[in-house]
Amino acid sequence: MFTIGDFAGLGRVSIRMLRHYDSIGVLSPAAVDPVNGYRLYHADQLSRLNRVVALKDLGFTLAQVHSILADDLGPIELRGMLRMRQAQVQSQLEADQARLTGIQARLHIIEREGTMSTQEVVLKKVEPVRLAEIAATADSFRTSDIGPVIQGLYPQLMQHLAADHVAPAGYGVAYYEESPDDTVIVHAGVVVKAEPVDDRAYRIGDLVGADAAATTIHHGSMDTCEVSYQVLAQWIDANGYRSNGFAREVYLDYDPNRTAEGITELQIPVEKV
Image 1 (cartoon, helix red, strand yellow):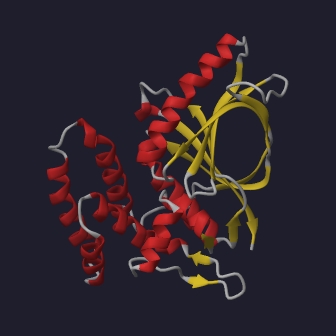
Image 2 (image 1 turned 120 degrees about the vertical axis):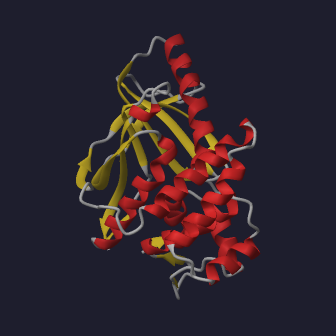
């Protein structure tokens, strides 16, 4: 099972939104810890979350979403409904492009329900790395919120490093953590061989490793990474693990001008339940 924070990260939504979904009965936790009151979720609840987010992004009110889901529509009926509304969204201007990307990603997840293979997940040790990194805040874990933030951070980081004559010595690495106000702190980093730095527009320090991490290779644009993250979630739940640290993205081969050819390793540190 997953805490609300872990489930928000895997489903790429905000903690605040999950709490709201619970309060109105759209998506309630699988259980509530009787000792501390923490909400707990199962990986198979990602299926319902995918539907809620897709329908909401397509313009349905939460009351309408609640009614639609109460009818227990199957993937075929739901896909038909989504595609019809998707055609309307696609006619809008460039300002709606980020929303459209999110809709397409959620639709892809729904279409693959029951066919996602966890055979591509590898459990392995992740070594610590020294990163030069810069951070900023995104409204939620959703790709449409994360994407613009991280895309702006890397050019800034590279500009700072070039000015200080610090050369990258390895892959780009991004990781995410929750902030007290339920937003997400996005860390964009690159492996370097340099002394720690804390007093500049960026920092250099060590990102701790993990004795065990569930990992998989995501191919293509990070706009569709939700599918791969949810494969990891299914594997973690099915094999008796729980997440134990920040989700990380290692950009093995990722050119912003050729995102469809991108190769990224997704890592979630885990521990046995």
